Amino acid sequence: MQHGKYRFIAGFLALPLIVYILFLIWPFLQAFQISMTDWSGLSGTANFVGLENFERLWESDDFWNALTNNVYMLILVPLVTLGLGLFFAFMLNVGGKRRKNEVVTGVAGSKVYKFVFFFPQVISIAIVAVIWANIYNPDPNDGMLNALLGSVGLDSWQSSWLGEKSIALWCISAVMVWGHVGFYVVLFSAAMASIPRDIYEAALLDGANRFHTFFRITLPLLWDTVQTGWVYMGIIALDAFALVQIMSVGPGGPDGATDVMPLRLYQTAFRDSQFGYASAMGVAMLVVTMTFALLTMRFARRERIEF
Image (cartoon, rainbow, N blue to C red; front, side, top):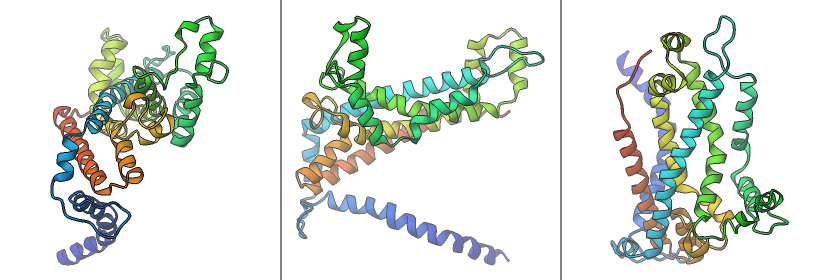
């Protein structure tokens, strides 16, 4: 019976495991192999060059600039996105006026608000990028943002949003926050719905205000969800390829201000035909992503709270 059970489990796992190895693990291994060659991607021959691509990568100012931009986004985007997601979810689920026989209530129409917040998630990232590129258009007649500022007398605030080196990266980061905050509003709302109302009621009856309720009850009980969301949002921030590729003014934006590692990899491989060097960038991206995930899971780990 015991052996039969193991054969049954192995039979169920065999096909998914084969597919996983074939389409995920094997390409990663191939990337390591290609990163050790000078393969151009156009010919069938590739010469082994050892760690030469990685040495070249280490000395590349363009790569370090792209990595620096990714690190900025890695710090800013998850922090703002998760912070806003927690705030809006808390307000929608716990921030309503007290009603008869109910100490803790959500705001009226919270389901409609959740739908509105979540709506950007159902739009293609390419469409989002095109919409916001037109909003940021520097022409006062075509760009919605500049036109809006001009209509309220703030002409001095008008700018070439994606053409200014100092603000281009932050404009794209704002779009990433706008596009993903709704997902976390819904995610955190679902997590908050599982918290017993008795806990909130006891805290409010003891004199706790909304501030203490959030930081002493909601956030500790949602910490596992926040931790997972931080890793997920960090990986998205480390990517950002589609937004940067479509929205940037020229390759990498003004003076490389919006250049990121995936865009640098894409240009190196498909524009410059240096697939070996691009594969080394891919390996470096894997190392950075795994390091970020491990550090987040390690230092954000807290004692699990049961309720």
